[in-house]
Amino acid sequence: MALYRITVITATGRLSFPGLFATSCEAVEQTMADWPEAKSIKAKLIKKASQ
View (cartoon, rainbow, N blue to C red):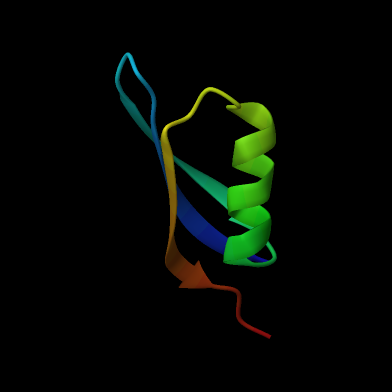
């Protein structure tokens, strides 16, 4: 798991929050499911999990 900064842009504004995901693809797909009205979604890696 890794910590990502998720940024969602909708018609009414912008929202940014952290989340734990396995990959950036998973982060974007999950955010798309949660925010279907989003115009743009970005996932930026903050910290990779140490093994």
